[in-house]
Amino acid sequence: MNREEKKRAAACAALEFVIPGEPVGVGTGSTANAFIEALGGIRGRIDAAVASSKETASRLAAAGIRVVDLNAVSDLPVYIDGADECTRHRHLIKGGGGALVREKIVAEAAGKFICIVDDSKRVERLGRFPLPIEVIPMARALVARKMVRLGGRPERRVGFLSDNGNEIIDIHDLDILDPPALEADLNQIPGVVANGIFARRGADVILMATEEGIESL
Ligand code: 5RP
Picture (cartoon, protein in one colour):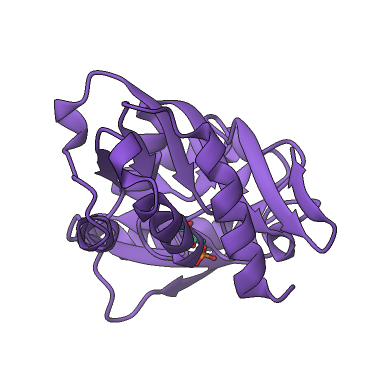
């Protein structure tokens, strides 16, 4: 199986977590796009979808799926999304596609977070993938300097603005020994909107596509 086939396999495996008649939260990225395609095939069975980005909202609408605002939903039983890295503790790095803030909000609101990945995303320790941090634009240099003090190498995502109108800095070479602690510490820096560590609210289930089939963590 090539990588695209693995993404599709993980996406299809996630369909069994979709609850008939209920809304479903949908993430952002190429694996989430494969899930949207699969979801289109069962659109009559779901109530609606909550999107984690403008891109996902338009893809859902194109697939004939009703998109609703998170504020209009009293209960969101499940959220399905990809990740840039995952560990066996179900800690993640997300935000490669720049949608981390809305992804974190939808994940927090969901009863269950099902993460769909191919096996290239598996790591022993988070940090090989540069950690995205969404910042209020005026805080960019402040946050970057603090990241250098932590041993990281910040790189501004040039020409990119998030759906929320903010900038993203990608932090290379960070030593992420304690993901929940670093996630909380970074959130304390004024100007940080969110960081891409998903550990305090990690995935409940990771569906990982491998050569041997779907591994469930
Ligand atoms: C977007 C994300 C994505 O889930 C992450 O970047 C993985 O993307 P892909 O499925 O394309 O590898 O966090 O903000």
